[in-house]
Image (cartoon, rainbow, N blue to C red; front, side, top):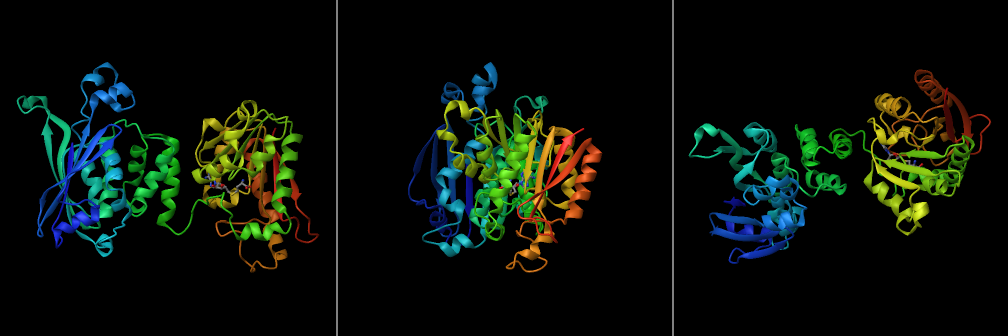
Length: 468
Ligand code: SAH
């Protein structure tokens, strides 16, 4: 399978500097699935073309049973289009061979790497499940002029009809880095074939490769879904993190890194520790044997929960993969003995969508999370936690905004953390929690966390819901 990229920028041979590959040579790179060869069929000052030829070894794929050919059953072992078509193998090779160019760095021509130049890509055999329409839908919003030609299944037998393979030319004026990242993401999206690379870090890859263009792409949802191979939880996590960039609101906070203001403010009270102690006590008092910590962040509460003998199943859930990585480190999961290791699990997930993995727990803890959710999304959150997951006990904490007046360094009217969407007064919290309880068949009581100010109440407020 091959792919060519041409430019008429002057002098066109600067393409070699941009790609860090000398046009005078043939470059060969071993890949896990075969090899990649880079060469320049033309290299003049007027026009320069680079060709990436990816040679997939189909026998090797079957032997390793890791590639799509290996998964496609008996027939798939013998009939595979993979060696001939542009697919995720091209993406893997692009990242490996042109990795530096994809970051936009160029040692010798930094100004050229940063400027838009005329570029033309040819993909002689691009599979598209979604036809020509999808090819246009994906590339035209990015500013490409798209020309396609459809391959028939077999030219000798026209009545067999058309194939899903297209010969595609994309032309545009853009930075080479952008073009490479578009191809990296969109080729597998069009192909929509099972490829072997989808793991949890694909969300990060998609967001990194798509950072500059995906948030504003009209088909971003379809792109995320297909790129992440319809793994709904991953696609959701990606969407949640893609949507925000559009508007200035709704950035999902990444816990795990020291967060700044809130930590500093509350440190004087060692409020965090008090909160953890109070919540652990409430979990124990509820008689729970299993608990899920929703929005677990870097896992401070999880670590304390692990010390409770009463608990035999502990799960932490967060939408942020980075937070979960920090949690994994903090809990030193890799070093725990097998008995304790079996007790605890970290899950990547969102509180905005029903998730069966959240069902069947005695208790759920939701510590300093709701104030990070957009107010209009609270109803979705309520349905997920109280309607679907439905643990017998829900322990939820949130700041008491009235107490903010007792933090001298916090300007009046400001929240404790820049990502907070709201902070509630005691009355507001109690009204919301009361309504949630009534709507979902729970009863609720409230308890203070931290030193109670006679006038303003405690710094943190806690609600304990119990199913009726
Ligand atoms: N409970 C932790 C972390 C609080 S910070 C503690 O008390 O230390 C809020 C956390 O909620 C962050 O880790 C953030 O990633 C997570 N979060 C925000 N929106 C979420 C959502 N929709 N689904 C799951 N987690 C979410």
